[in-house]
Each structure stands twice: as C-alpha cells, then as structure tokens.
Length: 260
Image (tube, rainbow, N blue to C red; front, side, top):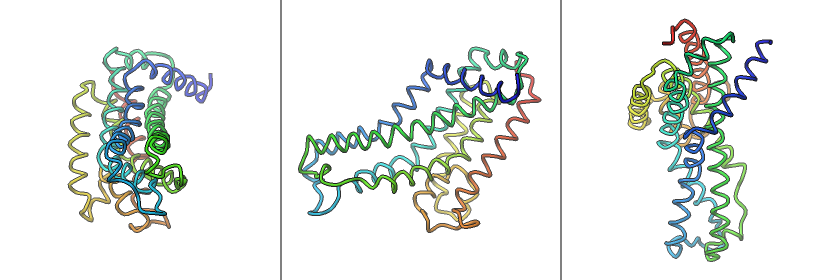
C-alpha cells in the first residue's frame, strides 16, 4: 500500500469510529444548542422582538447568535471535542495498538487530525442550518416577526463563520497535540479552558494578535478592520501559521514518543 492509501484507509476507519462516540453527538448538540435557545426566546418574547417596518429580522437573529457563540463557546467546544476524540483511543489503549501496526505513524496522527477538523466543520454547518430552520419555523409560528417576508444574507454569514473556523485552527493544532501527548484527559482539557479564559481577558490588548485562543474573538470584533498581512487578516494568517507549526511539531513529538 502507498502512503496515501494508508492515510485514506485510516481516515475512513476514524470516521466510522467517530459515529460510535459521544464526540459525534457533541458536534450535533453544540451546533443546534444556541439556535434552539434563541428560537425559544423569540417564540416566548416575540412581542418585544418584532422588527421595525421594512427591517429584516434575520440580521439581528443571525448576528446575535454568531456573536454569542464564537468568542467563548467555539473555543470551548474545540477544546472539549479534541480531548474527547483522542481520549477514546487513550482509554482503550487504541493509540498503542495503532502505533504497533505496520503503518506510517504520520497517517495515524493526521487522519485523527482530519477527523477533528471534520467534526468542527460539521458543527459549524449544523449551526448555520439550525439557524435557518428555526428562523423559518418562527416565521410560521410567529408571522408578526416577518421572517418569511425577507431572505437572510446567506453569503455574509457563511463568510463570518468561515473566518471563525480559520481563526480556530491555531487552537486546534495545539489542543490536538496536547490531547495526543497526555493520556490524562484532564491535562489538555484544563490547559485549554484556562487558555480560553485568558484569551477572553486578553482579547482587547494589542498583544492578543499573538495569542491563538483570542483569535475567534478578534475575527468577530475586528472583522475586515483589523491589521492586514499580504492583504489578508493578520489574525487568520497567524492562525494558519500556528496550526501548521503545531501540527508538524506535534507529529514530530509523537513520532519519537514511546506510547505505553
């Protein structure tokens, strides 16, 4: 088998295993939780949320959910789901078994990283679709809110969520390395939670541009008005660079590690 064949085969196996874990349902639940809460609030308190004449209710409905989710909940979700996916292997000594097989270690490491990224992307998709479904349902149940009278700005909010995902990559790379490196589930989880809180506190400081756990907040608060590197948001550039560095460093560390 070629190296690429090993990688594809490992990735398929990892995706199949993911369906049998809580991490799979966490991605689904996390994606629909905030839209469901907003749906309930709008359903109950609709009289206070009726928009002005000619104003689309979608803008407030979608923007409020994105702004409430991305700064804190998205980083926490990444920390939790990354730790859960790798912990399943640690708990069942699966990593030791995988590394004992005659397959390249890089295919094991990067196929799992692909699964983590896929889970995060899936949660973003669930989130966006849930917003549209619940908004349309509100248009049926509460026609006074005028959801059916307007079309949401799909591409505007898809762009915001896409930028948020790219801004999350720096966290993914580091958390994945920590989760793979430590058998104890608490270590990467505790480190991640502390870093997310620090990111929230430090996000207003100029130095936050060098701290990956603040990038989600910066991607929303700065938007296109933040510093640019080669015509692209510096936050996104740094996030991708940090992801690449930690992904390679993590693999090099795991490759020489004697997994017990």
